[in-house]
Length: 415
Image 1 (cartoon, rainbow, N blue to C red):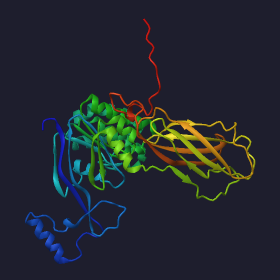
Image 2: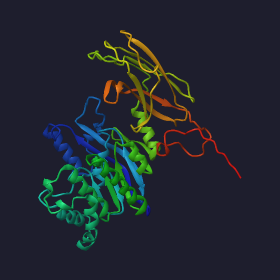
Image 3: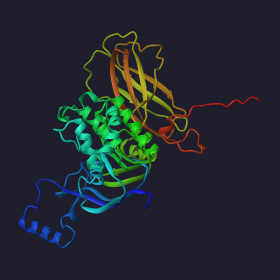
Image 4: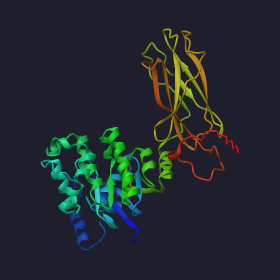
Protein backbone atom coordinates (compact mmCIF):
# COMPACT_ATOMS: atom_id res chain seq x y z
CA UNK A 1 0.00 0.00 0.00
CA UNK A 2 3.01 2.29 0.55
CA UNK A 3 3.44 2.89 -3.21
CA UNK A 4 -0.29 3.16 -3.97
CA UNK A 5 -1.51 6.74 -4.38
CA UNK A 6 -5.15 5.86 -5.14
CA UNK A 7 -7.05 2.62 -4.61
CA UNK A 8 -10.62 2.27 -5.84
CA UNK A 9 -12.72 -0.67 -4.65
CA UNK A 10 -16.19 -1.62 -5.98
CA UNK A 11 -16.94 2.02 -6.69
CA UNK A 12 -20.42 2.85 -8.00
CA UNK A 13 -22.40 6.04 -8.42
CA UNK A 14 -26.14 6.12 -9.14
CA UNK A 15 -28.20 9.11 -10.19
CA UNK A 16 -31.96 9.40 -10.34
CA UNK A 17 -33.41 10.78 -13.55
CA UNK A 18 -36.23 13.30 -13.46
CA UNK A 19 -37.61 14.46 -10.13
CA UNK A 20 -36.04 13.28 -6.89
CA UNK A 21 -38.11 10.64 -5.11
CA UNK A 22 -39.77 7.41 -6.10
CA UNK A 23 -43.16 8.96 -6.83
CA UNK A 24 -45.00 7.61 -3.80
CA UNK A 25 -44.69 8.26 -0.06
CA UNK A 26 -44.71 4.52 0.74
CA UNK A 27 -41.70 3.84 -1.52
CA UNK A 28 -39.83 6.85 -0.17
CA UNK A 29 -40.41 5.51 3.36
CA UNK A 30 -39.18 2.10 2.22
CA UNK A 31 -35.93 3.65 0.99
CA UNK A 32 -35.54 5.69 4.19
CA UNK A 33 -36.12 2.64 6.41
CA UNK A 34 -33.51 0.62 4.45
CA UNK A 35 -30.98 3.45 4.82
CA UNK A 36 -31.32 3.79 8.63
CA UNK A 37 -30.89 0.00 8.97
CA UNK A 38 -27.71 0.15 6.88
CA UNK A 39 -29.28 -1.87 4.09
CA UNK A 40 -28.94 -1.42 0.31
CA UNK A 41 -31.38 0.96 -1.35
CA UNK A 42 -33.99 -1.44 -2.84
CA UNK A 43 -34.54 0.84 -5.86
CA UNK A 44 -30.88 0.79 -6.88
CA UNK A 45 -31.20 -2.89 -7.76
CA UNK A 46 -33.20 -1.98 -10.85
CA UNK A 47 -30.83 0.78 -11.98
CA UNK A 48 -29.62 0.65 -15.59
CA UNK A 49 -26.18 1.09 -17.13
CA UNK A 50 -25.27 4.52 -18.46
CA UNK A 51 -25.95 3.91 -22.16
CA UNK A 52 -27.29 7.14 -23.63
CA UNK A 53 -28.36 5.46 -26.87
CA UNK A 54 -30.98 3.22 -25.27
CA UNK A 55 -34.37 4.17 -23.92
CA UNK A 56 -34.53 4.08 -20.14
CA UNK A 57 -36.91 1.70 -18.37
CA UNK A 58 -35.82 2.87 -14.90
CA UNK A 59 -35.51 6.24 -13.15
CA UNK A 60 -32.13 5.20 -11.69
CA UNK A 61 -29.00 5.15 -13.86
CA UNK A 62 -25.55 3.96 -12.85
CA UNK A 63 -23.06 6.62 -13.91
CA UNK A 64 -20.34 4.30 -12.55
CA UNK A 65 -20.72 0.62 -11.70
CA UNK A 66 -18.28 -1.68 -9.85
CA UNK A 67 -15.05 0.19 -10.66
CA UNK A 68 -11.80 -1.31 -9.30
CA UNK A 69 -8.23 -0.13 -9.97
CA UNK A 70 -5.02 1.02 -8.30
CA UNK A 71 -2.74 3.91 -9.28
CA UNK A 72 0.84 3.95 -8.11
CA UNK A 73 2.52 7.02 -6.70
CA UNK A 74 4.20 9.12 -9.41
CA UNK A 75 2.22 7.52 -12.22
CA UNK A 76 0.53 9.52 -15.01
CA UNK A 77 -2.78 7.93 -15.98
CA UNK A 78 -5.02 8.90 -18.87
CA UNK A 79 -8.75 8.31 -18.42
CA UNK A 80 -10.55 8.01 -21.76
CA UNK A 81 -13.99 7.12 -23.06
CA UNK A 82 -16.87 8.58 -25.01
CA UNK A 83 -18.99 11.45 -23.69
CA UNK A 84 -21.17 10.15 -20.87
CA UNK A 85 -18.88 7.22 -20.07
CA UNK A 86 -18.46 8.39 -16.46
CA UNK A 87 -15.03 10.04 -16.62
CA UNK A 88 -15.98 13.34 -14.96
CA UNK A 89 -18.07 11.55 -12.33
CA UNK A 90 -15.06 9.41 -11.43
CA UNK A 91 -12.83 12.46 -11.06
CA UNK A 92 -15.42 14.25 -8.91
CA UNK A 93 -15.56 11.27 -6.57
CA UNK A 94 -11.75 11.05 -6.42
CA UNK A 95 -11.64 14.80 -5.72
CA UNK A 96 -14.31 14.34 -3.01
CA UNK A 97 -16.64 16.78 -4.72
CA UNK A 98 -19.35 14.13 -4.56
CA UNK A 99 -19.68 10.88 -2.64
CA UNK A 100 -19.99 7.39 -4.14
CA UNK A 101 -23.22 5.46 -3.81
CA UNK A 102 -21.34 2.27 -2.96
CA UNK A 103 -17.70 1.28 -2.66
CA UNK A 104 -14.76 3.25 -1.34
CA UNK A 105 -11.58 5.06 -2.33
CA UNK A 106 -8.40 5.23 -0.33
CA UNK A 107 -5.00 6.75 -0.88
CA UNK A 108 -2.40 9.10 0.41
CA UNK A 109 -1.58 12.69 -0.32
CA UNK A 110 -3.30 16.00 -0.96
CA UNK A 111 -5.35 16.34 -4.13
CA UNK A 112 -5.41 19.39 -6.42
CA UNK A 113 -8.13 19.14 -9.05
CA UNK A 114 -9.11 21.15 -12.08
CA UNK A 115 -12.48 19.74 -13.08
CA UNK A 116 -14.17 22.63 -14.85
CA UNK A 117 -13.61 26.32 -15.43
CA UNK A 118 -13.78 28.18 -12.14
CA UNK A 119 -13.75 25.17 -9.81
CA UNK A 120 -12.68 26.31 -6.35
CA UNK A 121 -12.55 30.01 -7.27
CA UNK A 122 -14.68 32.69 -5.63
CA UNK A 123 -15.85 35.09 -8.35
CA UNK A 124 -15.77 38.17 -6.11
CA UNK A 125 -12.14 37.62 -5.04
CA UNK A 126 -9.16 38.71 -7.08
CA UNK A 127 -6.78 36.31 -8.77
CA UNK A 128 -4.22 36.85 -6.01
CA UNK A 129 -6.78 36.17 -3.27
CA UNK A 130 -7.98 33.01 -5.01
CA UNK A 131 -4.42 31.68 -5.15
CA UNK A 132 -4.18 31.98 -1.36
CA UNK A 133 -7.71 30.56 -0.96
CA UNK A 134 -6.87 27.46 -3.00
CA UNK A 135 -3.62 26.96 -1.12
CA UNK A 136 -5.44 27.18 2.20
CA UNK A 137 -7.97 24.58 1.02
CA UNK A 138 -5.04 22.26 0.28
CA UNK A 139 -3.74 22.82 3.82
CA UNK A 140 -0.76 25.00 2.91
CA UNK A 141 0.54 27.80 5.09
CA UNK A 142 0.61 31.38 3.87
CA UNK A 143 4.43 31.40 3.65
CA UNK A 144 4.39 28.28 1.47
CA UNK A 145 1.90 29.87 -0.93
CA UNK A 146 3.86 33.14 -0.97
CA UNK A 147 6.98 31.23 -1.98
CA UNK A 148 5.16 29.80 -5.02
CA UNK A 149 3.28 32.99 -5.95
CA UNK A 150 5.76 34.36 -8.49
CA UNK A 151 5.97 30.99 -10.30
CA UNK A 152 2.17 30.74 -10.49
CA UNK A 153 1.73 34.27 -11.82
CA UNK A 154 4.52 33.85 -14.37
CA UNK A 155 3.11 30.54 -15.64
CA UNK A 156 -0.44 31.88 -15.92
CA UNK A 157 0.72 35.03 -17.74
CA UNK A 158 -1.98 37.26 -16.19
CA UNK A 159 0.13 39.51 -13.94
CA UNK A 160 -1.67 42.63 -15.18
CA UNK A 161 -5.03 41.29 -13.95
CA UNK A 162 -3.84 39.63 -10.75
CA UNK A 163 -5.71 42.05 -8.47
CA UNK A 164 -8.89 42.07 -10.59
CA UNK A 165 -11.91 40.00 -9.43
CA UNK A 166 -11.92 36.74 -11.37
CA UNK A 167 -15.57 37.22 -12.35
CA UNK A 168 -14.21 39.65 -14.96
CA UNK A 169 -11.79 37.06 -16.40
CA UNK A 170 -12.40 35.39 -19.72
CA UNK A 171 -12.75 31.59 -19.70
CA UNK A 172 -9.20 31.32 -21.05
CA UNK A 173 -7.79 33.50 -18.26
CA UNK A 174 -9.76 31.47 -15.71
CA UNK A 175 -8.18 28.25 -16.97
CA UNK A 176 -4.69 29.76 -17.08
CA UNK A 177 -4.82 30.79 -13.45
CA UNK A 178 -6.66 27.66 -12.26
CA UNK A 179 -4.17 25.30 -13.89
CA UNK A 180 -1.19 27.32 -12.67
CA UNK A 181 -2.51 27.13 -9.11
CA UNK A 182 -3.29 23.39 -9.29
CA UNK A 183 0.08 22.50 -10.85
CA UNK A 184 2.33 24.63 -8.63
CA UNK A 185 0.83 24.23 -5.17
CA UNK A 186 2.29 21.32 -3.29
CA UNK A 187 -0.24 18.53 -3.76
CA UNK A 188 0.74 14.90 -4.22
CA UNK A 189 -2.06 14.17 -6.72
CA UNK A 190 -3.05 16.38 -9.66
CA UNK A 191 -6.41 15.71 -11.34
CA UNK A 192 -7.15 17.49 -14.64
CA UNK A 193 -10.38 17.15 -16.60
CA UNK A 194 -10.92 18.25 -20.23
CA UNK A 195 -10.73 21.94 -19.32
CA UNK A 196 -7.44 22.57 -21.14
CA UNK A 197 -9.37 22.62 -24.42
CA UNK A 198 -10.54 26.12 -23.42
CA UNK A 199 -6.99 27.49 -23.55
CA UNK A 200 -5.10 28.47 -26.69
CA UNK A 201 -2.72 26.05 -28.43
CA UNK A 202 0.41 27.59 -26.91
CA UNK A 203 -0.95 27.33 -23.37
CA UNK A 204 -2.17 23.75 -23.93
CA UNK A 205 1.36 22.77 -24.95
CA UNK A 206 2.72 24.57 -21.90
CA UNK A 207 0.28 22.73 -19.62
CA UNK A 208 1.10 19.32 -21.08
CA UNK A 209 4.79 20.03 -20.56
CA UNK A 210 4.15 21.03 -16.96
CA UNK A 211 2.11 17.88 -16.28
CA UNK A 212 4.94 15.77 -17.68
CA UNK A 213 7.38 17.61 -15.43
CA UNK A 214 5.09 17.15 -12.40
CA UNK A 215 4.79 13.41 -13.03
CA UNK A 216 8.27 12.44 -14.22
CA UNK A 217 10.38 15.11 -12.52
CA UNK A 218 8.60 15.65 -9.20
CA UNK A 219 7.15 12.16 -8.73
CA UNK A 220 3.58 13.39 -8.29
CA UNK A 221 0.56 11.42 -9.46
CA UNK A 222 -1.39 12.82 -12.43
CA UNK A 223 -4.88 11.81 -13.59
CA UNK A 224 -5.69 13.28 -16.99
CA UNK A 225 -9.03 13.13 -18.81
CA UNK A 226 -8.89 14.13 -22.46
CA UNK A 227 -10.36 13.35 -25.88
CA UNK A 228 -6.96 14.23 -27.39
CA UNK A 229 -5.54 10.74 -27.83
CA UNK A 230 -2.13 12.03 -28.88
CA UNK A 231 -1.82 14.02 -25.65
CA UNK A 232 -2.84 10.95 -23.62
CA UNK A 233 -0.20 8.70 -25.21
CA UNK A 234 2.55 11.33 -24.98
CA UNK A 235 1.85 12.35 -21.38
CA UNK A 236 0.57 9.19 -19.70
CA UNK A 237 2.25 5.88 -19.01
CA UNK A 238 -0.98 4.01 -18.28
CA UNK A 239 -4.58 4.35 -19.41
CA UNK A 240 -8.07 3.55 -18.15
CA UNK A 241 -11.04 3.32 -20.51
CA UNK A 242 -14.61 3.65 -19.28
CA UNK A 243 -17.61 2.49 -21.28
CA UNK A 244 -21.23 3.02 -20.16
CA UNK A 245 -19.99 3.66 -16.62
CA UNK A 246 -18.00 0.45 -16.39
CA UNK A 247 -14.30 -0.32 -16.52
CA UNK A 248 -13.61 -1.53 -20.06
CA UNK A 249 -9.80 -1.53 -20.22
CA UNK A 250 -6.78 -1.00 -17.94
CA UNK A 251 -3.24 -1.09 -19.30
CA UNK A 252 -0.53 1.01 -20.89
CA UNK A 253 -1.73 4.21 -22.55
CA UNK A 254 -0.97 3.14 -26.13
CA UNK A 255 -2.94 -0.08 -25.73
CA UNK A 256 -5.79 1.83 -24.08
CA UNK A 257 -5.96 4.26 -27.00
CA UNK A 258 -5.91 1.43 -29.55
CA UNK A 259 -8.70 -0.29 -27.63
CA UNK A 260 -10.71 2.95 -27.59
CA UNK A 261 -10.20 3.51 -31.31
CA UNK A 262 -11.16 -0.08 -32.17
CA UNK A 263 -14.42 0.46 -30.28
CA UNK A 264 -15.22 3.76 -31.97
CA UNK A 265 -13.87 3.53 -35.53
CA UNK A 266 -15.68 1.21 -37.89
CA UNK A 267 -14.19 0.07 -41.16
CA UNK A 268 -15.91 1.90 -44.04
CA UNK A 269 -14.41 0.73 -47.29
CA UNK A 270 -16.84 2.34 -49.70
CA UNK A 271 -18.76 5.58 -49.86
CA UNK A 272 -21.26 7.03 -52.30
CA UNK A 273 -22.37 10.64 -52.36
CA UNK A 274 -26.00 11.30 -51.50
CA UNK A 275 -25.68 15.08 -51.61
CA UNK A 276 -27.34 17.05 -54.37
CA UNK A 277 -25.00 18.57 -56.89
CA UNK A 278 -25.74 22.26 -56.37
CA UNK A 279 -22.40 23.56 -57.62
CA UNK A 280 -21.11 23.88 -61.21
CA UNK A 281 -17.71 22.62 -60.02
CA UNK A 282 -16.25 19.16 -59.66
CA UNK A 283 -17.86 17.02 -56.94
CA UNK A 284 -16.90 13.64 -55.51
CA UNK A 285 -19.52 11.04 -56.31
CA UNK A 286 -17.95 7.78 -55.19
CA UNK A 287 -14.84 6.45 -53.40
CA UNK A 288 -13.77 2.87 -52.77
CA UNK A 289 -10.78 1.26 -51.05
CA UNK A 290 -9.28 -2.15 -51.80
CA UNK A 291 -5.90 -3.76 -51.26
CA UNK A 292 -3.96 -6.58 -49.66
CA UNK A 293 -1.91 -6.64 -46.48
CA UNK A 294 0.86 -6.39 -45.38
CA UNK A 295 1.98 -4.42 -48.45
CA UNK A 296 -1.23 -2.45 -48.53
CA UNK A 297 -2.21 -0.68 -51.72
CA UNK A 298 -5.23 1.58 -51.58
CA UNK A 299 -7.09 1.77 -54.84
CA UNK A 300 -9.39 4.77 -54.64
CA UNK A 301 -12.01 4.87 -57.33
CA UNK A 302 -13.93 8.09 -57.63
CA UNK A 303 -16.21 9.86 -60.04
CA UNK A 304 -16.46 13.54 -60.74
CA UNK A 305 -18.99 15.75 -62.43
CA UNK A 306 -18.88 19.34 -63.62
CA UNK A 307 -20.91 21.53 -65.93
CA UNK A 308 -18.08 23.95 -66.73
CA UNK A 309 -14.49 23.47 -67.84
CA UNK A 310 -11.64 23.43 -65.28
CA UNK A 311 -8.29 23.17 -67.08
CA UNK A 312 -6.20 22.81 -63.91
CA UNK A 313 -8.31 20.84 -61.41
CA UNK A 314 -6.61 18.11 -59.35
CA UNK A 315 -7.35 15.74 -56.46
CA UNK A 316 -5.66 15.36 -53.06
CA UNK A 317 -6.08 12.35 -50.74
CA UNK A 318 -4.96 12.62 -47.14
CA UNK A 319 -4.33 9.77 -44.68
CA UNK A 320 -5.13 10.50 -41.03
CA UNK A 321 -4.07 8.47 -38.01
CA UNK A 322 -6.14 7.35 -35.04
CA UNK A 323 -5.36 10.62 -33.22
CA UNK A 324 -6.89 12.67 -36.04
CA UNK A 325 -3.71 14.26 -37.41
CA UNK A 326 -2.73 14.12 -41.09
CA UNK A 327 0.12 11.67 -41.68
CA UNK A 328 0.59 12.08 -45.42
CA UNK A 329 -1.03 13.46 -48.55
CA UNK A 330 -1.11 11.91 -52.00
CA UNK A 331 -1.53 14.16 -55.04
CA UNK A 332 -1.96 11.84 -58.03
CA UNK A 333 -0.66 12.86 -61.42
CA UNK A 334 -3.82 12.90 -63.53
CA UNK A 335 -2.13 13.71 -66.89
CA UNK A 336 -1.52 16.22 -65.21
CA UNK A 337 -4.98 17.61 -64.40
CA UNK A 338 -8.55 16.33 -64.37
CA UNK A 339 -9.85 17.12 -67.83
CA UNK A 340 -13.41 18.16 -68.57
CA UNK A 341 -15.56 15.88 -70.71
CA UNK A 342 -18.97 17.42 -70.04
CA UNK A 343 -20.20 14.22 -68.38
CA UNK A 344 -19.65 12.12 -65.28
CA UNK A 345 -16.04 10.93 -65.37
CA UNK A 346 -14.45 7.93 -63.62
CA UNK A 347 -10.95 8.05 -62.08
CA UNK A 348 -8.74 5.63 -60.18
CA UNK A 349 -5.86 6.44 -57.84
CA UNK A 350 -3.39 4.00 -56.27
CA UNK A 351 -1.61 4.84 -53.01
CA UNK A 352 1.15 2.59 -51.67
CA UNK A 353 1.11 2.45 -47.85
CA UNK A 354 4.11 0.26 -47.06
CA UNK A 355 5.49 0.82 -43.58
CA UNK A 356 2.36 1.94 -41.70
CA UNK A 357 2.10 0.45 -38.21
CA UNK A 358 -1.01 -1.56 -37.22
CA UNK A 359 -3.98 0.63 -36.35
CA UNK A 360 -7.01 2.52 -37.59
CA UNK A 361 -6.72 5.14 -40.33
CA UNK A 362 -9.08 7.36 -42.28
CA UNK A 363 -9.05 9.23 -45.57
CA UNK A 364 -10.12 12.68 -46.62
CA UNK A 365 -10.48 13.78 -50.22
CA UNK A 366 -10.20 17.23 -51.78
CA UNK A 367 -10.86 18.54 -55.28
CA UNK A 368 -9.82 21.96 -56.48
CA UNK A 369 -7.61 24.13 -58.64
CA UNK A 370 -5.53 25.86 -55.93
CA UNK A 371 -5.35 26.17 -52.16
CA UNK A 372 -7.78 29.07 -52.33
CA UNK A 373 -10.07 27.45 -54.92
CA UNK A 374 -11.54 24.24 -53.59
CA UNK A 375 -14.49 22.60 -55.31
CA UNK A 376 -15.28 19.72 -52.98
CA UNK A 377 -14.05 18.29 -49.67
CA UNK A 378 -15.10 15.14 -47.82
CA UNK A 379 -13.52 14.36 -44.44
CA UNK A 380 -13.26 10.93 -42.80
CA UNK A 381 -14.94 9.58 -45.91
CA UNK A 382 -13.29 6.16 -45.62
CA UNK A 383 -11.91 4.18 -42.69
CA UNK A 384 -9.58 1.20 -42.87
CA UNK A 385 -7.44 -0.87 -40.52
CA UNK A 386 -3.89 -2.13 -41.01
CA UNK A 387 -3.42 -5.47 -39.26
CA UNK A 388 0.06 -6.67 -40.16
CA UNK A 389 3.27 -5.17 -38.82
CA UNK A 390 5.78 -3.74 -41.32
CA UNK A 391 8.57 -5.39 -39.28
CA UNK A 392 7.10 -8.55 -37.70
CA UNK A 393 10.32 -9.39 -35.81
CA UNK A 394 10.60 -5.98 -34.13
CA UNK A 395 11.49 -6.43 -30.44
CA UNK A 396 9.58 -3.42 -29.05
CA UNK A 397 5.90 -2.65 -29.58
CA UNK A 398 4.42 -0.36 -32.19
CA UNK A 399 2.89 2.83 -30.85
CA UNK A 400 1.76 6.20 -32.25
CA UNK A 401 4.05 7.67 -29.59
CA UNK A 402 7.05 6.59 -31.72
CA UNK A 403 5.45 7.32 -35.09
CA UNK A 404 2.95 5.81 -37.50
CA UNK A 405 5.37 4.64 -40.19
CA UNK A 406 8.50 2.54 -40.32
CA UNK A 407 10.61 3.80 -43.22
CA UNK A 408 12.70 1.47 -45.34
CA UNK A 409 16.32 1.99 -44.36
CA UNK A 410 19.71 0.41 -44.88
CA UNK A 411 22.70 0.55 -42.56
CA UNK A 412 26.07 0.99 -44.26
CA UNK A 413 29.09 0.34 -42.06
CA UNK A 414 32.59 1.33 -43.02
CA UNK A 415 35.89 0.92 -41.18
